[in-house]
Image 1: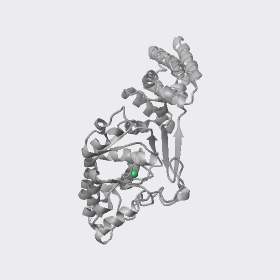
Image 2: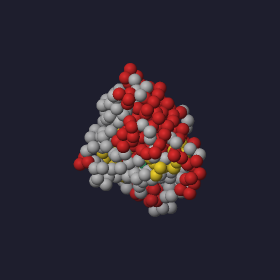
Image 3: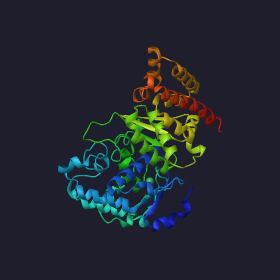
Image 4: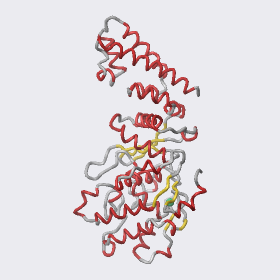
Length: 390
Ligand SMILES: [Zn+2]
């Protein structure tokens, strides 16, 4: 893995490297980064090296989260502010049941903060077993002087309902994708905290103010910078389509156009979208050839230029011949003196977004219709070249 040789240097500067692992852990890390960006107003992009697969977790980010807990004081009157799952850790909340207790000494917010400050002191953490991040960062027992914290640390050392109630504590219901079928899954203290951000990694993130969204998605990939960007793009295109394959396709197109990165074949073959609906998870991948086509810069730019989901859908379904047929048919219609009603219907059917937007059925819009027809014909040629690796 790139960058592993610099670990000791980065640790002493208040950062530790996090490498991609299974989707559960990855979503936690991406969710953490999203919340940190919102809290600090710092653009996370500048901390990402697009050529690397890891990210450097900065200790001050955990400290910023600690300050936010202090600001809210676990106060029930401020529940409305705590619409984010990562802040809802007390008592019987929906996602992290009894993560932190509400009785006696537990009521002291400072105790939870002291846990976070200890967790952010990376140089003092010890390496322990962890089924999620595989590297494992935990607060050493010698540093824990408080019986309450000691109990809390033991509680979060296993993946169970307090970490994430939808999955933990019901071994038979665990979805596939990462699981080793053991009901007792040891995790490190750092993962025990980062997983609170799991749902923030999904789009749209859930809130308890409104009803839980019927569906949310997370794009899993073998690189944190790639995952960060893909999921940000997914968030920005979510309103355009309800089809998860289209959302993944649109996100890949955005990534390809905006990020000057050459993707390795192995990376392209390991991009999946995790769809979370109430009580179930689904894992969807696009065929490797389709990903290869969408991440071809010329194809991505051409699809973006056309801007029609129906045309993207044909690429997603690998119906490349239909691109040729549609392009030729549109060209024929555009060349005629008069556009018949049946032909107007055809234009609206194959270009449901463009037709009304560009008024393509109007007589004075022939030039635009010809332009789009040529764009689709060119796309057809580009897709064929991309498939053949040209
Ligand atoms: Zn871990």
